[in-house]
Image (cartoon, rainbow, N blue to C red; front, side, top):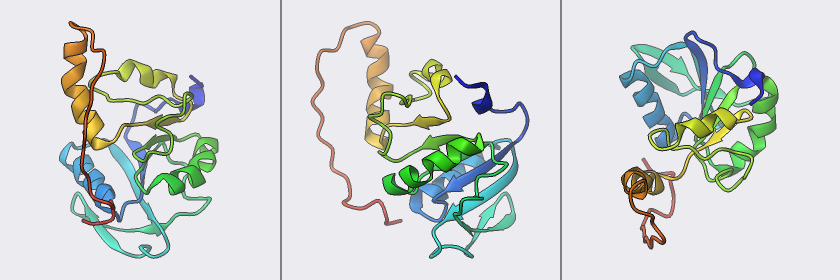
Length: 171
């Protein structure tokens, strides 16, 4: 792992890429609920959502349009704006020195990007190069159940069918 991508031991400067979407709103709520140590929070979205006001810990924050400069002096980017947006900003984020945790499908199959479920394989996160991916929601839940079983009994095959909405755009 490149030392440049280590998170500092202090409250973090955090950006949520896709903050105006349903998952972005949930990320915001979880950070508040868990009292995540944040020094500065930046809410990023497309030009269509720029200017919207969102609440965090009793403070109103204005959503900013994502630009090349949005990631300067940021430690951690939680990205949930979709695959094309994650791909678009990946190099800019990595060159800024920030750690990007991506919630889209953009990097899940990339062998150079660790695919992490913290309760199952947090030790693999140390191998990141400024980017960590996570599986989709149904896979995460399935892995949480199967991981302890697989430690005791080898699993040869799992067949799963899931039915999800055609769009993640709805709230």
